[in-house]
Length: 168
Image 1 (cartoon, rainbow, N blue to C red):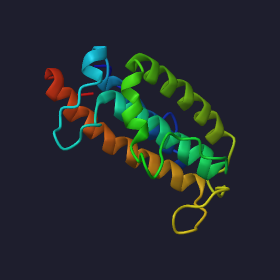
Image 2: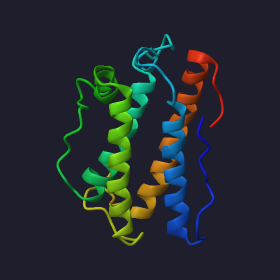
Image 3: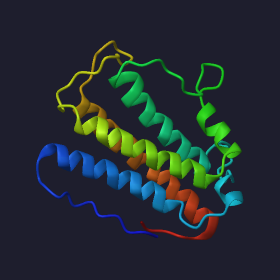
Image 4: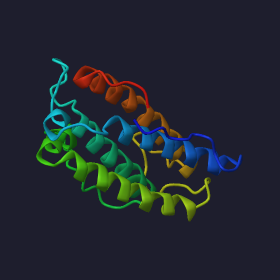
């Protein structure tokens, strides 16, 4: 698997945060290298029928969409997630090739990199979180690092179960 560098080019807070988010994103993509279309759609955990490599990558895409576009920018939420289908983004992922999901995730990540570069870390979100607070960009970056890293653990387990591959 591709080894991703987590060492920032500079030691300021923004560079460290964006480097770690890119590192987590890159690790998610690396976990999917060489996986067949069939294996990307396999649900291996009996209690989690929607947890597939494809489902997790699609989930990560929609999580970033939600935090950057809906919460930070205050745009309308168009995610395939509803009260009736709270895991819609994971359910529909099996309808798309993993390569397409990974390409879309990479393209989206590039757009969000530009968005982050254009705002101060202290910039407050336009939208609010569940408790009514408006978080700042710094908080969103920290949250996305945590969320992506947590799901990388899931991707790691699924990949090992699929074909025994471990590591970055």
